[in-house]
Length: 163
Image (cartoon, rainbow, N blue to C red; front, side, top):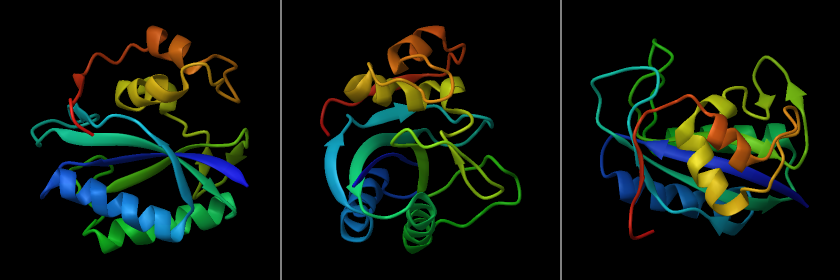
């Protein structure tokens, strides 16, 4: 069994309901939910003018390979109304990023693990630090808590009280 860290995020529609539906589909299609972070409200990253995102980190235990997890995640995004925009960073109903998959390092055209911008994004590091601050980045060799301290991203990331 592998442990995969998935970051969910969306800023369109009923954001909490969409997060909940995504978690249901992930447990049905990818594997067993082992841990989940708080839900965070975050400013858009890489573009301006859209509604704030809700983000949540899930730790899922799976028997699927990394590419199969990616295929399932993309399918779940589509099921939840995700439409790919021409511009890379734009609003969306649901985005599921594979941040980490055990200590696997993958660098392919369609899949990069660990996520190549993980260390640059406060909205990914805050929930990772919450539930796995001592976890070491397999490429950078630093813990998630250290990466968060070093992160230059100053966008707003606020934990919501209720999960």
